[in-house]
Image (tube, rainbow, N blue to C red; front, side):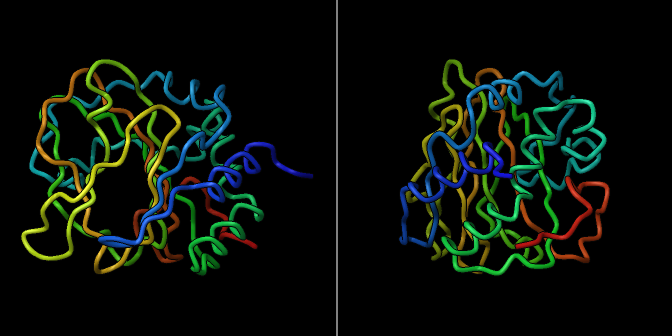
Length: 218
């Protein structure tokens, strides 16, 4: 039986705005049904306190929030998202569009709530991540200035473009040696909410982060 949420995502993916410079990335609109996105935005999580703003998420690993199976059981919207992104039709569509192989990967979803002086230095994702997509959630004053940075490959990796940030828009890329991205220093008004969706290799060490313990199937 067809999954309506997966079908919605696939339409967004296939209609995405494709870019090849300075490296390959996609800009997506209307990623999922509005009711699901609104519920994800309204999840009752509070931004972690006393976060270190050192330009890397991993310095706050103990305080990060992941949409695990336990969270999905408590909040159906998170389960809907996981089900849509685990659907074989979704996997096939991503593989066809992005020219990648996701066989033998796991789904990982992080719920991000960035505040204040949060920033990310230009970086590339580790090779254990085979796919990275950001779903933007929040609205409010200043949120239109909260998109992911697209940085040049050449040092010192200057800003080339900023992805549009608005509820139910997103950015995706296939991690590689050239996919330099970040979030330059700026003042965040309110909470910058987003969900980072990855497919990661089968031997991903931080098993507690996984949204599914079932390998991706086509």
